[in-house]
Every structure is written in structure tokens, then in C-alpha cells.
Length: 312
Image 1: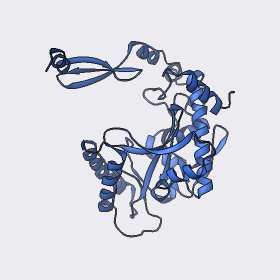
Image 2: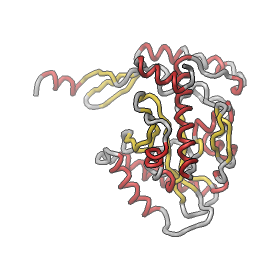
Image 3: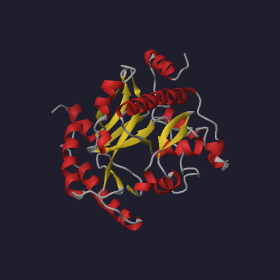
């Protein structure tokens, strides 16, 4: 082994991505922001609203690159909505996207991605549905392995990797539980997800899916329960305190405004968002950044984003 290789195993600093670096000391990794990114975070304009406790619903929409990306991602959501309607599939806005729809009638100003959920039976059909029905050949859906034994379907654009809509799978739990029981079962699902996280063999989407299907068949009773509770699937590591919701919290789905577009939302958004975020009308402890706020875009990517966002 060369001296350089030995030295790098003891100590090294390398770029992780455009905004962060990774320091390795005796095999232990530490990720930290680059100086320019740290300063941009520190000077985040939305911190003014947070510090002064200004009504969060009055925070103005994003500007600049993050707004351009928001509107381009909105075009991907519209295509997903179209494909679902063409194929009789159902989706609903979820997580921060649903929160943005309720609180801001669109994107949370400092967020640029879109999250939706689908029940398993529809989730498993969406990739083929896109192949059959998309109106834009550059927009497609695929299983995406995202590290730490996680996998979800994303709607993507062939010419711009910074655009995506995350689709999360949901399962019928074949049970009807009260809130305390749902909290307890969430802890059980969390432990299962943690064990999957440690499985280094799950390094592709297909491997994750195969093992998840096997585990799901063991943890979900093999019986039909009408209007069963609905739980997150274990393909992905969720951070929310409650991973299971009652049927009537989600269904029937109802239209909800998102950036002037009529998307689909859950039946009881107040209950749903309270379960996930608590006081969802208040500020988070820290205001983060969208996934692509400060990435460097090529000219082609900028053109794609402007065109999709209707700015050309």
C-alpha cells in the first residue's frame, strides 16, 4: 500500500457535493458545509421573518434560482397528475408539499422539492403508466436507490438531474388502531427500518424492494380489513413521529390548490399535518434550504428549467 493511500485512510478531506466536504479521521466521517455555503445559510433572508416572528403565511414566495426550480418541479407534478388521471391512479401531496399547499397555497418559500404519496397498488403501476401516457418524453419515473438501503420512485427529467418529484409508497396495515396503538406500532416499524439501514447488501432498488416485500408480508396481517389504517412503507427512512394514519384522515382525497394548480390532498389535512409536524402553522426551529438552491446549473439545465416553468 502506498504512503498516500495510508495517509488518506488516517486523515483526508474531500468534496462531498457542491455545498459540503467530508473529513475522514481514522475511518470516521464528518460532513461539514463549505465556507461559501455556510455564509449563504447564515445570511438566509428568511431568518428575518423567523427572528421577528412575522406571520408565516405572509412570507413572500422564493425568488431567483430556487423559484425557477420550484416552477419546473411544478411542471413535473402536473405531468404526474395527468398520467395518474389517464391511468386511473391516485396520489396525494405529502409532507412539506402538503404543508406548503395549506399554509402558503404553494411551495414553502425555502423549499424546492415536491413530495407525494401513493398506495402500493398504484405506486407499483406508475413507472409503466409514465411510459405509456406521458406527454413529454423527457419526463419519466424510475425506481431510485438513495443510499442507506433506501429506495423510492422519483419523477425525473432526462436533461436536468436537479428536478424531481418524490413518490412515497403507502400500505394498508389491515388493522384499525387508536392513536396510542399507532404510536407504538410506529416504534416497531422504526426498529425494522433501522435494521434495514444497516444492511450493506441492499445496494440497489431491486434488492431493497425484494427484501421489503418479504418483510411486509410478515408484519402486515394476511386479511382484508375495510377502511384499514394506512402506514408508510419501510423502503424509506421517515423522521415523522407517526407513521400510521387512520383511513378517513387520508381518504377520500380532495382537491387542494398548489401554485394555482388543483392537485390532490388528503381528506383531513389539519389532522394529518398536526400528526406529522405538530404546530404546522408555526416556524421550524431552523429554516433550511431547498435541495438545489445553490447548485451550479449548466446552460442546458437553465434552459430546461425556464422552459418547464413557463418563463420562455
